[in-house]
Amino acid sequence: MQDASIQVDRGQRPGAEQDTRLDWWRDAKFGLFIHWGLYAIPAGVWRGEHVPGIGEWIMLRARIPVAEYSPLAEQFNPVAFDARAWVALAKAAGQKYIVITSKHHDGFCLFDSAETDYSVARGTPFGRDVIRELADECRRQDMRLGFYYSQTQDWYQPDGDGNDWDYDESQKDFAAYIDSYVKPQVRELLTNYGDVALIWFDTPKGITERQSRELLELCNELQPDCLVCGRLGNTLGDYATTNDNTIPAGAVPGDWEVPATMNDTWGFKTHDHNWKSIADLIQKLVDIVSKGGVYLLNVGPTALGEIPPESVERLEAMGAWLERYGESLYGTRAGPVQDVAGMRTTRQGEVVYLHVFDWPVDGTLVLPDLDADTAEVLGGGGEAVNVVRSADGLRLSNLGGAPDPHCSVIRLRRNA
Ligand code: JFZ
Image (tube, rainbow, N blue to C red; front, side, top):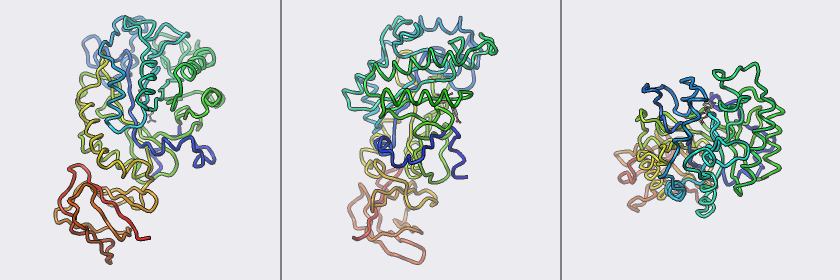
């Protein structure tokens, strides 16, 4: 049960725990996912009709022919795009890395590629290399940058996977698409933009073991420190991802990440207002980290290049919380107690952090299966907390009022 929501796409290498290339990512806990491309223009509406489902899939969901979808490029002019502001927002949110769609399933590229003119750099009035601007800005602001890259599905390339409304599947040469298009593009991404933190491959579908392995070897050859997400396929890659938006029921060993949305879409949609609350998002972050995972939280910028204000507000609130309580998450590992309702734990060496979602009105908590000599309410009034070992477990009292409306934190220590 606990492991059920980790996808089969997981990277499971023998000895992965010893692989120190992942250490920064294991400590980071929180990243920004950016889904941005031509789909931001229809934003979930085609020919006046709302197309249900995630926004970046509109081309497939509405079976839009390449001849009608690709001219969206001529309209793509995101004059409000500001790499400096995007990176600054991730910083303010307390996020330690950014992953952006360099090419999603629709095939449109956010980077300047010699392999195609179907890119923001060559095929739009905007004419700029978005990935270059972000990479430069990340370097300036000391932020790690990774690239989402759809290696199997490409609905624009005649030999790519997925588009059966323009192209005859039986005529496709998928191997040629991998060898003469995907590999050169991965080479470009790992050659032209400086240090790349990770490559986020996705939806492996029918990619063969050999094709996945050759892509992995290419990444390792070009940038040995670049991590490869488990959605490369065929159980290759450095770490696992859960099903989108799915948090495991309990602690899961190994290296894993939860990719997640703030509403119900990755790519921007005008119709999607189903925003998760700030409390929910903070508690999800705490929940994931307490189980040993990493949270990759998405924004879908508009066609103008603006991150929706609802997303900005949420990220800034999460950053404000992390500013105060970051020590209880960054660099920690899964906590010793997993099953107490409304509470989570993380561990850093001998220190245990107790996260309390619903602060007790009577200022008292009883915690089975926990042991400590001292307890300190982070950002609390500074009153000494009473710590008593009782038959029911560790009893904390004189906790005072809740320091935080979303999640308060108590630091537990044992005497040396
Ligand atoms: C994929 C993409 O198709 C989608 O557009 C988005 O980029 C998302 C982050 O990833 O969607 C998936 C992939 C895998 C699962 C679910 C949705 N899964 O394993 O459950």
